[in-house]
Length: 304
Image (cartoon, rainbow, N blue to C red; front, side, top):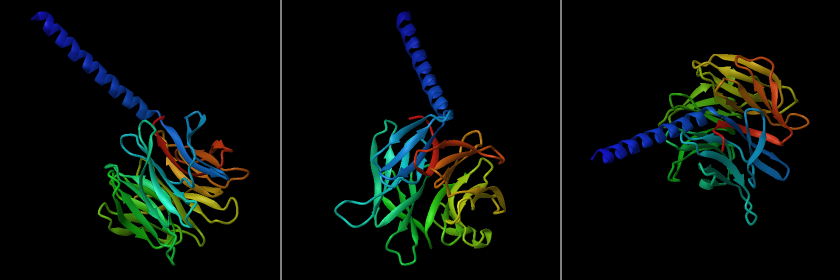
């Protein structure tokens, strides 16, 4: 019996070590963050992956108007895009999912909607800002796509919507550029105003959203006018506004890395779009990447 007991014990220990190894690998992957960027240039619409040292590679190509990006809690990458079928004069917004083996599938879609910002909750539901191309007022709908592919109308904003972001309590924030308002949605879909037009100057539109580790909401502001006229501001959890950066050109997607650095997609920076990296607390940024097309939205996730 002793040999049998020995072998059973050895097998148990081996399984424990294998499990510990798997846990260690997951922890290591969680701390090894790469930056993912949706971008387009004439004839080239892609998702790029950047290592922390700035090394660039193409993660996905053959897309059309890729926009919002977000990871779920198990490492699936979700992406919003809008396609125009060759045989129809309409738009189709789609949410794509790249699984852990990088296989892509369509989670859901909506006809006559242009998809912009995207966010994923802890249950794996994907939320997308959908600009209604048939609305006379330019209203936008927030669709919720469940893991099973069901499409639910979660909420709406009265004008052209852009970015989405969840806070740590599970409330969804939505930037409405035309209404100069950031709306706050409870988990049940109840909508309130987080900050309204009085928080923005004439001609300013809130676009990209991202929360820092202290719960401050960072917002990219576009004027859609002169280069260098745009900015980034942030709001405390109670809505108090502060200015973080000025002199930008079409800042769009925002994302924080694990060390607290803020990355900003400067979509129309001249001569080409670029990604800026701001140190924690603000200050002069560095150019993290440039010259690969027009960057739109950003997210951090494990290497893929």
